[in-house]
Amino acid sequence: MNLAEKLHHLKVAPGESAVCWLGQAGFFLKDSQGKELVIDPYLTNCGERLRGFKRLSPILLTPEDLSPDYYIITHPHFDHFDYDAVPSVIQTSPGTLFLGPASCWHKLLEQGAPPERCQRLNRNEEYQDGTVKIRGILADHGTMAPDAIGVLLEMGGHRFYFSGDTAFHEALCRDVAAFKPDMAMLSVNGRFGNMNAAEGARAAVLSGVKYGTPCHFWTFAEHGGDPDEFCQRLKNDGRCQPLCFRQGEIQIISKNNELLYRKESAS
Image (cartoon, rainbow, N blue to C red; front, side, top):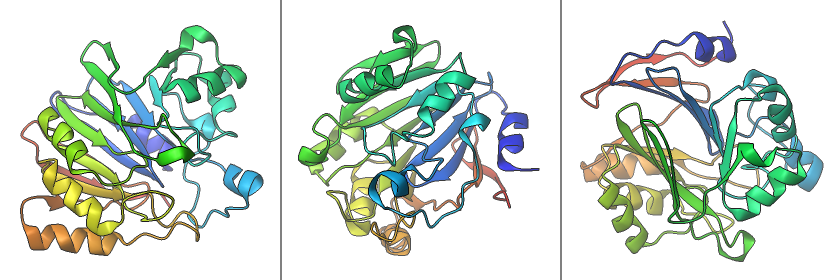
């Protein structure tokens, strides 16, 4: 069974949340109502076509495999706004709602997304659909992406923080901590204006999460990143549990905020 089939057939009990790392900064989440959400999935080789950044990690999902209810894009760089994947999802998944800051909203329209399927999600703006709540917050990605966002997500009875691409700021971590997230997904590649492993670990601790997850590493030779240092620093600190996914690995978080079991990554 490939990863697309695993995610499609995955059953999530009430009070549980399923999380899968898609590689780079991309994640897939699913709740007990069958609602599916992706954030920043990089599913093609558009980076090599556009910028010469050759993908080193395998592609486990194609754009045609996706039919999420919500598709969040934190900023318009190719490894977050996949310029070869987005048009395909627009065509093959008519029920998907795309969310992102103004820069992404304009590009979605350029890619052919109907306006009614595009939701602006700038900093300090919130979208809610039943029990799913999505809020945009600051991500400091400098002049490279001046309106980039991080995301605070409430889904499946759990709260998540996705840093997007950002530099480290203690004040930002305090804002995240006020949300009381259970898990933080943090960019740790240390280049192109992003936190490095030490800063990502510090952000996880200051954000008050139970689980700190590194991402945005090893997809391109140009990016770098040290997830081992991230995990070791959290182990040494003791206040936050490191949770380092394999690409394609699915984790189930229980109603009591415990990890129930691990699914093997797709071959």
